[in-house]
Image (cartoon, rainbow, N blue to C red):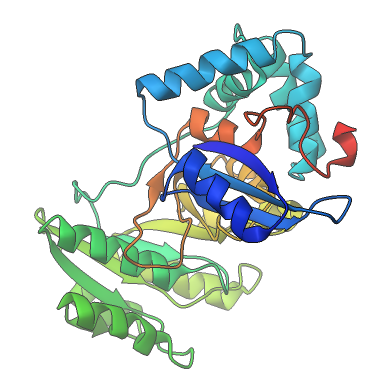
Length: 331
């Protein structure tokens, strides 16, 4: 993922610069007035694969940062994103010792050394996928995205909802599955869920949307654990980006106790800081698999790698943008 900052007199002119520079697939990370109030600043990102253009961008970074202190530059970016202090020290130290020519690539090396990355695949069906997480994290949208991706790939899909307590919970998922031509199965208990799971399904994706859980509520977590065991599903934690990193660090440890090993970061389009993502990966050693950058179910989940995460954390590729805008630590 490549992140760039664009400044123009008006919002429409800034958006035009974004389209010209990054194309129609660009993601708006944040927008607002410039510090002097006389213009508009937009930070946008676009997912990059390994192409000649990508390599050219990396070469450009090598030139821009040849004189910068990598450890301090990485530390500044992590402070801006609100990463936990001890994690900032670990990542910046590992980055400083990496044999990398730019801060972004050095941070990518640190992520690769300290974090796990495990892309969520709709091509393999080793177990049903159960989406779990706290309220407001976007589990149902992620479930709908997975169903959409599978249908577009002409794969068989079974959709199950356990979200029977929240008003409109089932209805929201059902609105999406109806469009896709998928019959939504509704269950309310672990035993009921067990009866609808096909343990021998090797050619069918089984997606289970659960009710939001309060990780500090023992009764809710026990019920969630029972559903995980009854379905033999892999629980995938769904977390909203932009949350408080310390709160996330506490929560993910509790989700880890019920079997969570991977997580998806959502609402990346409205979060300016990604410290909660780093805290989740570090606190409970969870593997980061994908991110969601849009509430549109037609927009697929984007796999993330050490390099793309580093580019998201360090938007220094824009000309003259050697420090993150509005970061006091970067002054």
